[in-house]
Image 1 (tube, one colour):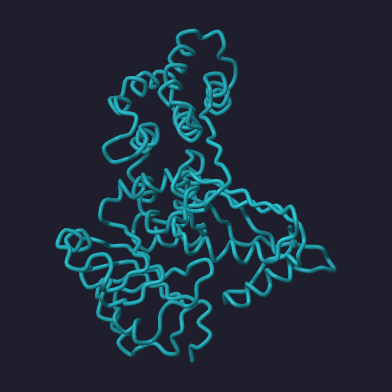
Image 2 (cartoon, helix red, strand yellow; image 1 turned 180 degrees about the horizontal axis):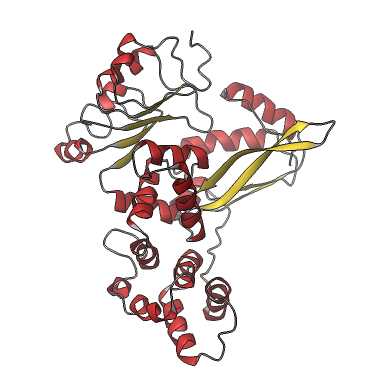
Length: 376
């Protein structure tokens, strides 16, 4: 049931109350798209909340790429969506790859159909390889068809060949900008201006204009998708609008590719506590030594989580969807000894003052403190 308004609440108790009022024992159909949560307790808590105020005949539809998700949710039955058939695959490729009349070019059509067949009916693979070939001269199509990448359905890195092949044809500049996007948690919304600013801060690009161009290339080539520009009402009387932030997302399979090609440069640390990941793990500690850019999501112990990271250049504290502010003054103090730090985002945190040692971060170019209501 749509309310046609944006929810600004962040506290769980307030959200529960608001949801209860919105549902009000009405019958509803709720669609949860692209769910990855495999934590049964989280789902049980949400289901209890939704069902307690549901009217008779209400239903919840969940889409996911993980079989475990369906098992955790205890669904009545799951429906496996099949891949595209040969005709559907060709139609999708044809629409995205060809410009103008090509039906009479038999050799080109045969080569294209062979390439489409290698995509195994996966829409993202078809669209990605089509976007690549659309930008290449037809003489360059044969090397794509003949590439060794196609020898395995899934590469050793866990990536899909079509996506890897498309990445391999990016410029070096676009490659590093794309791989850097692994710093954002899977499924998160990316702010275009923030992404370009991060590229600029880390010297991946020479100018904001070049960043705009790289961003457009990554969108055109399907590495970034779901681009949306929000519009904010400027004057209800004059009926004028100003453009809000432009956002985008990365397909989960593209995020897997970004993680693979970024190596140890970018990482996301989630829900770390001294008793969980990395403790006593020499291998994990060695992997973290080379991390240069990281996001921390719901980190309980900043010092422990970062003890193996030698010289990070980018640190972003992320909030969960229903999360609370992440860090306080004590935790940010841990970061003030990082000499090479260039970008630090502590937005929506509980800090009330910046440590004096912050002034010693000589390499710091950007410090974001948006929504820090306690800051004096």
